[in-house]
Amino acid sequence: MARRCQLTGKRANNAFAVSHSHRRTKRLQEVNLQWKRVWWPERQRWVRLRLSTQAIRTLQRRGLQAMAQSAGIDLNQL
Image 1 (cartoon, one colour):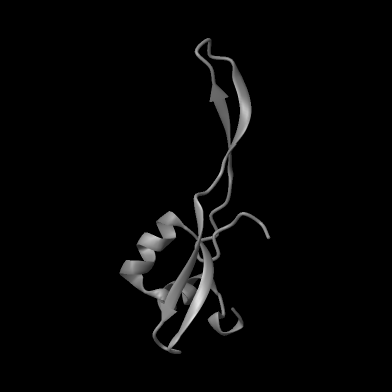
Image 2: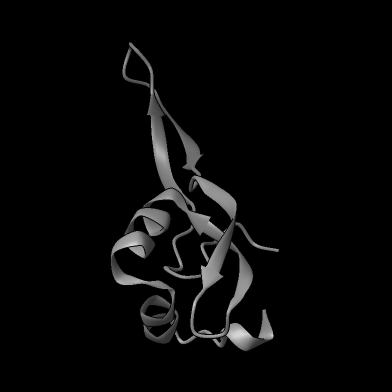
């Protein structure tokens, strides 16, 4: 499974690690992903998703159903 948020699609970013002498080497900035069990009130059941921490915060405001529809995810298959 790719390191990608299931609701927002966030994934790793290419960046440079810059030393004190300003030498730059390539590195990856990984997304802070967490396995989260989210209550789905429309179907009265739990759904287990791999979400970024930013998506967890947004989920509390917008709701699971709205975010899944905007991401094009069918929660019945999870």
